[in-house]
Amino acid sequence: MLSGTSLSGPHSLTGPDRLPGARWGAVFVLAASVLWGTTGTAATFAPAVSPLAIGAVAMGVGGLLQAAYAARPIRGQWRLLLEQWPLVSLGALAVGVYPLAFYTSMHLAGVAVGTVVSIGSAPVAAAVIERFADKKPLTRRWLAGALLGVAGAGLLSVAGHRPGGADGASGAGTESALDSWATPAGIVLGLVAGVTYALYSWAAHRLIGGGLSARAAMGAVFGVGGVLLMPVLLLTGRPLVESWTNVGVGAYMAIVPMFAGYILFGWGLARIRASTATGLSLVETVVAAVLAVLVVGERLPAAGWAGAAAVLAGLVFLLPRASGQGDHEDGERLPLPSALPRPSMPAPAMGPGLPHREVGAQSHQKDSADGNSDDLPADTRDKEDKAEQTRG
Image (cartoon, rainbow, N blue to C red; front, side, top):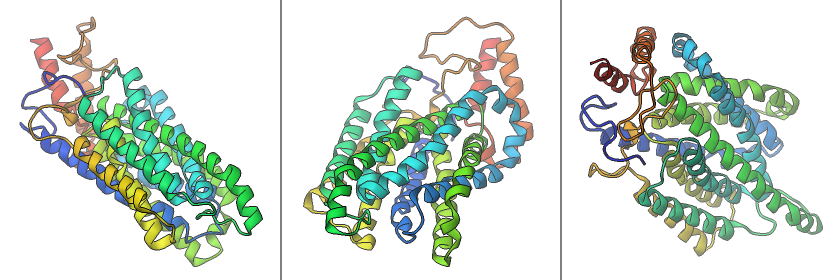
């Protein structure tokens, strides 16, 4: 969180009061997390489909749908995308790795454990990335919520694991042999998934903070990531078309949790920082665990339910507050080279032409928007106001 002196004033995302924007951002992320929590259970309905194919069809096709949905703002903001192409590429690479690691983790360690490790490690990874890449300090409030959520997720993970769980191994001897390496391997892949989830969330948030609209940023990052996943889908996806059930699972994964879920997530990232978003998404672990118990038949003892309660309790600390103190999530702006300095940050030396160039870029984005508020960069009005003050 940045200090309370930063970027206050009337030109905010949602008007004079910033907090409704941050609260809506939290609502969008929570709604996305509920959709994501269904993916592990949905995948169990297509047991003949490998986790690589599930991940490729979900994130690959879902990413291409994101790009198609964002085609107009991407065309209107292509110059900014080219300027920030290294960041787009980094986010897209993380998008390509994440589903392969995530679904393989669930396959090896079980739905509850794989989901908890993957999503539970993401807030810590996001905080580390923000701390070192953006020099953002962590608030006590965020630390309390994240620690409570991660501890609950860990408890849920340990309590939810049962030898010979939901990874589908058959035969007592084979089952025991698989458990000796499958669960540790699944946990390692879950950590990889958590880091890549944090990485593409941070990249998308930074792109939005750099002047891109949420649709353009998410469409570009997920569209390129979807292209990267197409070869994996071609190599592993044949079982997806061998039955109507498999087709339905693939279509559901791509359209509902990935396409619709990441539209909601993009709206959230335009209003709250990546570490907060990944923290709130811990609710996915609760949804996944409950569905694993109710639908898949996995067992969750009392300690597991206590872990789920701890995750939900952590949300109290992670949700934006209404007091005006603490996180001004949607007012936050990332210190990109092309951005003007924030009052709470040391002001680097800048040439006189920079404010005029920045306002021109924002004006170009406004002209290219199709009238949908999601196609406009979240910080346009703030930057224009700052530019006027600099020129004055």
